Length: 150
Image (cartoon, rainbow, N blue to C red; front, side, top):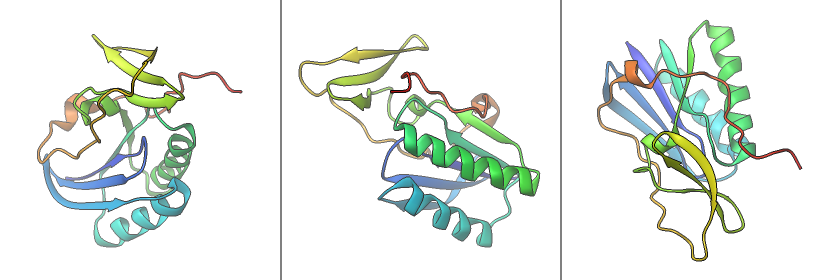
């Protein structure tokens, strides 16, 4: 089974291609989601035929999440592939995720909240795991938007 795992919360964006639960190929690109995600997807689907697609569905950069969801949902509908959302905190060591200003999303005991920091907290970039149990990752494909629309 071939699985794609996209880390889509913020740039740089990553796509891991997994055979079973083992990472076999990695794509990484920096820039705007609208500029880098479509070519990344195009390159990957020319090399691999995924059976399932996973992506970090938030919280994080709203525009990146929207673009990732639209691109991946369209691909999954066309190819008849299931799409699953996963928490980005799994891939960044549960470190805070930038929201806006001095505000960051934090996950405590599985509950996600917005927290203000006087000083910028230590942030760890999301990283693709070399091996993962995808059955434990399966979540709703809907993006998780925690901030109200301005």
